[in-house]
Length: 121
Picture (spheres, one colour):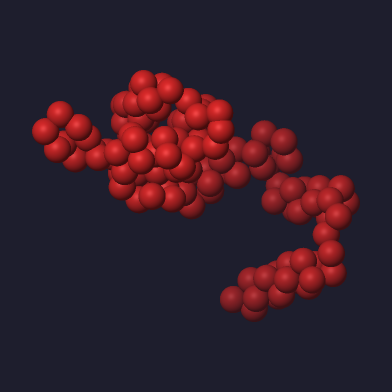
């Protein structure tokens, strides 16, 4: 799966949130400063060429929908991150967060619960 540019990710986030949307509706949900309509339209067509987006035609306008889910894409991106920056080791990623990020006790407890659940499966 191809990695998306930041602009493409921004459009996909809006589309994942909406489910199905026209370019005008995607633009409404984007933060300021909003990109031009033509920019979003071009990005959506690029996403369609890459296989991330499909469309339904309504006369001359198109309503777009995601073909790749947020979780599916996130899994691929996270996998690349682990491979590229943590020597392919999820343990190294977890170690990074435990050592360098301020996790409160509740977050640590939740992580421990997840590890115990996984271990018991």
